[in-house]
Length: 94
Image (cartoon, rainbow, N blue to C red; front, side, top):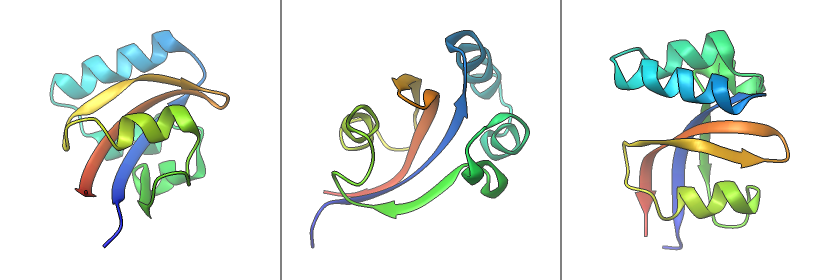
């Protein structure tokens, strides 16, 4: 089977907001709830869930983190042309 991953993210416009949300998650806040409240991506309504995708299907900065970061660990801020992301790989098949 080829490489694939499942991830969820929160997209915001500033690095400061991204850092603040990351601190809240590390303090025990619910990732999905914060995604619903703050993410400017339509996926926010699904708790930030992006579903399953393979390498090359997302922007390069995003891709790099998704296919290298530890699973179940919130990463970020990750800057792309869309803004700043907090990103968590929920599952990965290498």
